[in-house]
Length: 544
Image (cartoon, rainbow, N blue to C red; front, side, top):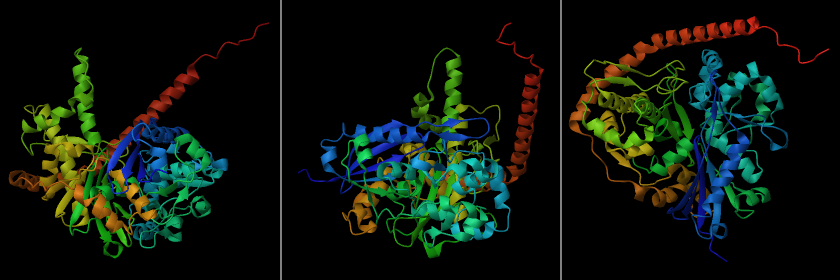
């Protein structure tokens, strides 16, 4: 019989689902990826077909057989992680109630604002350590309860993306301590908290919250049905990972025992976090923002500030350039331009422009929560060219990272970076100078999948604890420190107070623009309704 020497980590991103095979000691053997799709509508909805998401996950697992010899006979365990927040409702027979509401969904904005201004929100924040925002299941369920209660009436359990996949893999309805604590619970106890649930007005929906499972201690076997769909052996232990933010950070080096270190993931979103003991968390009630998310290690949590959009800002700029070039009869795809970013950065002046990187349709959640926040350039003049704009966008990501770490206290003594954008030397230089810290890039290609696979490794006793697993899976893969450039550091240190002042000064402008958009939408809706009312009645299809 073949030795069971492989752990599979499933990282179900919003856009791509990946299944990654690792040896028991953390060497990556192969990856299978399947595009994941979602739909958006003008009312702010961002939804995903739940059945299709599971089918894509199963396809990714089947594809892994072609990349790893003898996979089925060698797999020792599976683990799964996925995006935080969002609402995946499941009803009778473990069937979806409808499409999932993603973390990108903006429909709960008004409900969120209302809940955030209530006196009970202070106690909710104290327990969760997490500011309320439109991404979260709690806010989305409160909005559903007010405006479409039939969805919750038909549901038997409220899950997240990874929980939905875990249900399909194991037949178990469950969630993990990280999601449970920052949405409905207390990060100190890693359990649900009645005060939090009451603050959201969801006491009568408490039965929808699933059991909490610690994936380093408890696994469930792969079902016969899931085995047939994935080609993996029935009974294989499956571990439910924590939310993808902390899984990625764990795999990239957020918790290696080195004091003062931090980890930033520069992907579609920007996630900035530091690992601390749960009794060392400092909460400020004045301007609630950020998350406190448990780590799969005793008494350890991450303090987190997240930018709703990071490389999405770069994608926007490159798409604009590609669209304009294509208009001239020379078709370009924005991905063709990624390799030019470092060159544009070299041909532009540091700190010449300010860019607020709030390009997301749902506003910003770190270091402030404002669904009306929007992106913009400040300081444009006629001599500025596209390289200047691109530099400003990249510098905006650096300033946003500094803004987030400033909200959590001192700048890190060392910054570990992961995410696709970490490959850019120019971006690394900007992040290093903005945070005034040396940066190190993890050589781990798939940090999120590795993080949840590490949980499975501990669960099946391949390691006695998470610290010993980190010592073999994470620390050896950290690259050499890249020191901050002195000139850039001085430039950005001088510019940052202006960046922060601009953000604060723009708040009423964003609110006024949001009101204008709302009024324009209502006027257009009224115009459309009048047009429909003015149409002549349809001719009868019948005849005498």
